[in-house]
Amino acid sequence: MACPSSKSNVTTHAHSNQEEKRAHRLRLSACVTKHLNLHLHLDFDRHVIRGRVALTVEVLEDRFSTLTLDSSDLSVVSVTANGQPARFSLGPKHSFKGTPLEITLPFDLSRGQHVIVEVTYETSPSATALQWLTPEQTAGKKHPYLFSQCQAHHCRSMIPCQDTPSIKHTYYAQVSVPKDLVTVMSAVRDGQEVDPQDSGRIIYRFRQTVPMPSYLIAIVAGALESREIGPRSRVWSEKEFVDKAAFEFSETEAMLKTAEELAGPYVWGQYDVLVLPPSFPYGGMENPCLTFATPTLLVIAHEISHSWTGNLVTNKTWEHFWLNEGHTVYLERMIGRCLESEQFRQFKAIGGWKDLQDSVNTFGANNPLTNLVPSLQDVNPDDAFSSVPYEKGFALLYHLEEQLGGPEVFMGFVKSYIQRFAYSSVTTEEWKNYLFAYFKDKVDILNKVDWNAWMFTPGMPPIRYHYASSSVPVQAKDQDLNSFKQSDVKTLSSHQVIEFLSLLLQEDPLPLTHVKKMQEVYDLNAYMNAEIRFRWLRLCVRSRWEEVVPLALKMATDQGRMKFTRPLFREVFNFEKFRDEALRVFLAHRAGMHPVTSGLVSKDLKVDVSNAASQ
Image 1 (tube, one colour):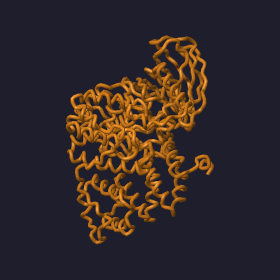
Image 2 (cartoon, rainbow, N blue to C red):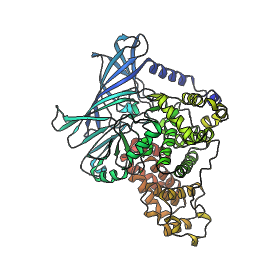
Image 3 (cartoon, rainbow, N blue to C red):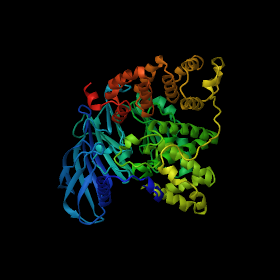
């Protein structure tokens, strides 16, 4: 835990857990990966990657002879150290951490020495980092598709490595794919050639010269095309989406320049955007040089901001995830403030507060996973994922901004923090110490902040925000039905419609007569904006409008973004009459879902996965 004041909040865990944590710390303090050299052969028939990885490891202690790497469902063929065969074994399997790969070196090393450990291996068809799509699951319907998603701790199912955000390394990769496919990675493209082993395949080469954590290694292979959208940016997708995507993300360079003015130079060289098929579980993923986006992601500012907060300065463990996400939301909204207005930033903050309230309601206000800095001892980071680190983190930074002198003053701190910790990983305690050092003449203000309530107490933040008024009609449920007018919504921007529906979701369910009247007058079913559609369908299902249930389940399965899929399934599941239908639709679609999404929806719907597999 990060601060001395938090001690009363820390539960005393079983002795064995402490031992395991201590052993993990010792492993990380014994050596550190500096570089990965990857040779990957993608086998679309068997849904596996045949891989060879050479890890350049720096030794941090004397008499070093054993190395432990993270792995999950990997078949290890052989291991060498500096070209000599090395003994290896797989340790006991952990429910979500996988199986440690224990390597015994054929020699001892001293502090400061380097060793190149090469592992030849093959992934499992069920590797949690990888989703293999059939041609039918793509837009073009002709070629298969593969994409990875390594955050938080899934890289170990794709590459044996030190799979922790506390260690950063560069990487070089060569990837062999069938010649009809194109490969891109979270790295700068470095040429291609016909595979000398097989003329029906092409090898693509990549280099990433900026050190980064394993969770940011990313790979995509499919029938991809690209369009230039700026001097350092291209958009990639299947050809069916590429021109639309180029239009959607045409403001990328303007946002990059604004971010540089706020946060300092962009160090990654290229900033490309890849629009994935709809089954990707997140709205976007900030992989360096290649942001992943789904067709439902319309604004790229959040992922751009991660180039500084998350990728350049990284949370040391997933307990400190708010350092990545809270700062990124803060920077994203500052970009919005520069390009639009302060009112626009306030508006986004209102929506964020609603999302936070929603997450706290879903988890329960006393759930320790709603702490800004939760204890993740024996908790799978995937299970802890919510808007809490994003929006509670933003709320804390906004609170500090208000106390310390306003947006310009506080943004000066954020920029300085980024420069101070660039290329490294940090804890909340290090962040807080730097905050106190930076504002050394305002320590009396900082000492008045209730740090324990903000960081180590579950539920909503200790301070209720009144962001600037959003000028949105709120009284829908109290209104006479005849007073609903088309002009109510016609004059609103899409952001305001989203806010309007979010406010209604905070209230008790509307009477069915009211949502039917809203549909009649506003025709909300016709809206294709995913954020609007998602909220409207939830509102209708809550009001027990039976005809809308198929639309809600269709949206839950047409795309795989967990932000939409999980709440829609939960809403239908909570509608007693359609509980079995929610289960039936989920079981019919789960094979095509991303493994993280299907696992979490299974928990939401209380599906016994072992029984479901046989159905």
